[in-house]
Image 1 (cartoon, one colour):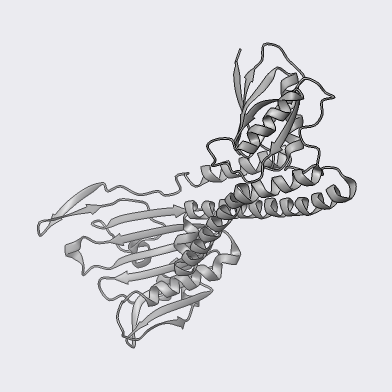
Image 2 (cartoon, helix red, strand yellow):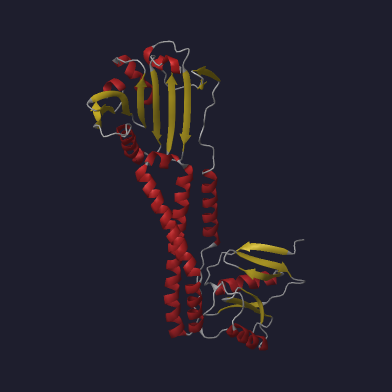
Length: 394
């Protein structure tokens, strides 16, 4: 039989009445509280269940960082001991008392003083932590938004950044809700204490909502570590001019042979795949050996868009990458060309210093494709370019 147990603290820092009732139920079941922190509540087993009455008191002018009780706390404890209350545990601003007499005089009797003490303690402790965490989550949100505008495809392909952003948004919303609940309670509690001479019981988040939040965050954390990246491995190597080059033999959705109807025996076929909750990227390279650079080669990147509202963002990103391919001051642009031969909805071709390059961005219903032809000069017939639509336009 266990002699100790630990439970997650699901109570708001100002919910003294909720914590008191919880500790009373635990003592009736045979468990006495050892310590209470913002995250955990620890108990030890009593020799026999005892229905203690508990009260939580806050002391203004103290904080969670104080190492010793103040003189005011010590005098308060002495007065309480005379009426049968004994201190169970404290973390400086908050002290927890218990009493076996259900009719004993309360530890604190002035509801206005109780509310003011809670607020002063909160200003030096819990609220500071809330605001600090709020600033941290806003900073992370700003960094993520900046990264999205700088390189949206890479941001959207990163499960780590996506999930981190979602988690921080959850935290940001939870903090705002918590601060809003506290300030509403504080305002109402002062009014009721002055007019009705009673302490307004706060309402913590329900256990179900807290557990749901924990489960959602746990699922999101697991998702960001799933193996969505699939690197390929070379099957062999060859040497040329003292350098070693890898040869891949991956299965590609489209090859030079599929387009030109030729044999590609000495070609290397490499594919890299990335996938996230929003996008899927397939990057393929079909090229001859380094000393056969006169032969035609093909490199393309396919971005499959899982969320339609992101389609234009992905298209603009690939067009920007194409225009920024050459880092110089020469004029470059993406020219809209006839998309029908490619079986696409839109087709763009890179113009560099007034010359049309063999680089394209092709727009299909659910995918955007960036294509680069290299090697010998290619001439494309309608039959050859139609293969792209048959492959990526499905």
